[in-house]
Image 1 (cartoon, rainbow, N blue to C red):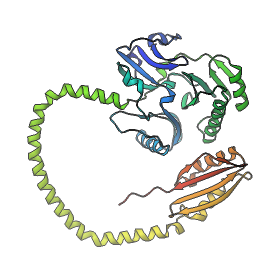
Image 2: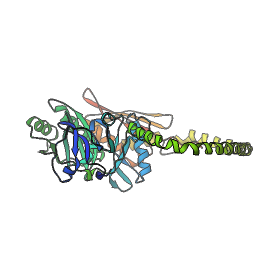
Image 3: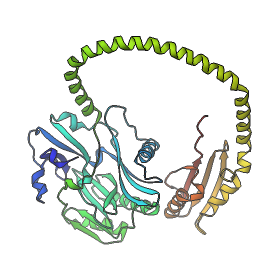
Image 4: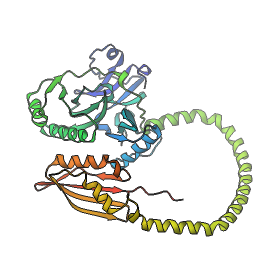
Length: 405
């Protein structure tokens, strides 16, 4: 998205939604949002409460592979993305470490209400937090309307933003922000924060709540001016916007395409008839080859079936004893015990245990997910849950299904 495409942006600050004049912000001025009629062209800044954000280390630098992994993670998180002509999931690379890439992913699981209600030509859709640079070695907090937002950065870029809601006492906001920071530091998404930066005026209640949860310096600063040069190359377009554009384009092209369509239809009918005849001949030849190769295919399939039966006993990647040993080496000396260890259908591992503290459970969760010797499994590990005086942890690892030959 190029800022030069429009002089206006629609976004939300602590006062609510409004229009921002971009030439003013380009000069570094703090320009207030304006309540006015919609301009002819504008950029839409997506607030935190209208998106789902998550960080992820991905073992690839290939953009196509990263996109596929991000789509899988969206499904695992249970985010329902409607099918359509638009684009509702995108990501930005934050840092590379060897063959791994730290990715900040954003999904829009619903239609943005204002984007269809306001009659303007939207020239781009970008996450609103991308207009600000994250403070170094810090967790940032700011308000979008009445809602608090927590932002976590690394290497000069955002890795995650979270809509924290509105709490009159601020205690829940501070606690949730702290727990997320602990989890992200354990997973290597962020460095342990050295301070908390609140983009707001000084507030003693907020200061006290954050000091109590983090026990690190808390700074109150004026929110920076939105900088569209920081926005990055986000590519979002809600379905209803994309469909409207396609309908307009289609109406203009219908008259031109009508004559061409009739000519092509006649040509395709003839070509289709000839193709069917050719396919029939090819199918007959293919069926003959299949019949000839059936005995060899049955022999190969029998060998594959025998291997599937023997694999758990001879393959160290699937041996229950070997897997239990690898997991046991990750358990801290104190504070955690394995309650149960199960193998289902020779391709699923279920480990349940109890930790004496939340941090121990989170530490083990991160260790299992990062352990190279367990990388053949796709791990699903939920946050530890408190049970009386302990925290229960369940880790489920599944071997990917081999594609059918």
